[in-house]
Length: 297
Image 1 (cartoon, helix red, strand yellow):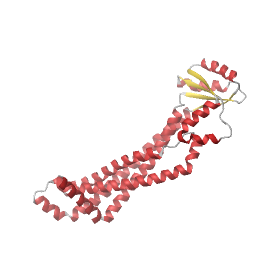
Image 2 (tube, one colour; image 1 turned 60 degrees about the vertical axis):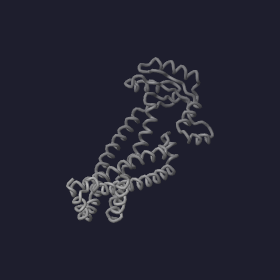
Image 3 (cartoon, rainbow, N blue to C red; image 1 turned 90 degrees about the vertical axis):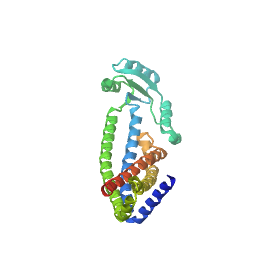
Image 4 (cartoon, helix red, strand yellow; image 1 turned 135 degrees about the horizontal axis):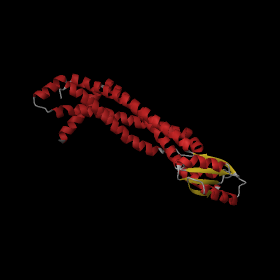
């Protein structure tokens, strides 16, 4: 069994190097597909993270207070808003508490906020909503209270983010299916060349009693090797590009969205497994398709 395994690997590597031109073409095709998939994966996962952060406020309304609004006035607003239909709870949050929450949200990058000369965040009220249907009415009511500077309700933002995420996911699926088909065809053609070149040898092997799986082994391994090589290249390129993006716009994203980008370690760890699975599947499928046609199996 071990001897057969090493024989299969040896034959597969020989076939990869023997058909270098088509191997390179196959690697480029699969790598291109995985890079586009990786791009969509990175975009979608970051949008989902931002949406999740905002979704935490989806069932709440933030009421920002003027600097001149006293705590007694704020408590009076709390009592007024608690009587509104659809309101579950109203909490008073000081600017210091808001800053502490923001630092916690930023995680390891929270130290960047320590450099601020003063706390720019306002005191606020957090209105927990039990009925989303009544949220707009509650937000309008809060905006009419004296001492209120602004009212922020995230429903429209979350809806837009969810729609954008769904659109990107659908686009990614369509593009991925198309590129997977193209990659399988390219790999299949690469294996076909090998089958043609070894047609006489395969006939002799079958004549002397070699099993179909003994003949299939090297071709299947060749496709898997091509897929794994493509996956490794794709992961490396994605890691470099994502690191560059974080270096260029990472801090701006923190400031604009108040949400960190997904850590590179998390993305790369998942991309390694996803790309490896796709690369192996594409290589194996390409090999199987070519063998079914040319080996009558």
